[in-house]
Length: 489
Image (cartoon, rainbow, N blue to C red):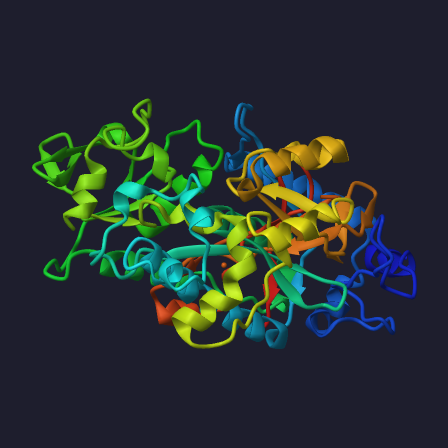
């Protein structure tokens, strides 16, 4: 039997199995409940079904060799760079499924941009009671020095990303929004390149959407972010440096877009203008694609101990003399407490219903939601609003309850979804991990499949481009990704 037949044979009824600790079945990304292939897999069936375990072992070895030759690494904070790992088993989305998802993500990108404009501008969400002030002002991502009425930048959010997962009914849910400095595009490009070499026939049959239009759209969006009176604005990619966990991704983006990769020490602010040091002279910078977190971007007005940013950058932004993408303070949108209010914010700011639902979330700063969370601690995933305290779910219930009651505005409870499953290659046989897919930026737990990337919230042409997914990670560190989630035409 081949690996795909082994996978199907190992499933129960015939393709849906319960999640550990849950009576709800999982949605299977490969097989329908009646045992037939999902629509996205049918065009690949003739090639995919014939793949044997020995063939996948060969592919796995070649993938590792190509990634090593290209020097692709990923490092977690405080750890040494580890080899990037790529799973040869693809996550396949057919055109119909992707189309509805694409529309929902495009709307969400526009909504997130509108929220950011409002929170740092007129603040009607707070004035009209749509959002509780404590949820915003109590989050460490809210950068107060950038909040002012009549804000200059109507498009503070050029890139956004979303972590997605399918529930037991096969419906997509947003698990988290990524707006601080969305990453993944460089790894997506590398994944595509490697898999086109090691599995050329299957890669051709997949009929993937190309990444080139996306890269052109991203480049265009960044150039259009510059001052209107400049025909050729200078754009740079600001990186924390080689110690950053996603440095390879940053360097690849800079190379593909044709923009200089710089660090904070390469830039200086003079008379409110941001200038780049070159061998001959200082040259003006008009747009900065920021991969440094907001808090570390300006040691003069933000974190004084930062050696990653540019002193005076915040003042240059306030004067409108440089555009930072995404804007300083965009990290406030990563507050998971906002997920509980997305529907109301969409109605208030866009005048329409939210197309893509979030994972059910309760912010403990609201008394009714606090009671709901405290009564279901064993059923909900507890998170802090600022992203710290990752291990809080491992605390004893009584200790966890005391922590929440001590500062309820810092916690949210989220429903534990029985996420979908898809085959992942583990040496010797394919297994069904939980699947959480995050289509990427510009314009897209038990073992998890995660596709990450980014959308350009400001480019409608890019929003129509449907291949924004990067690789999917299927295991804990070192990160291993699915190289080519397929979005059918």
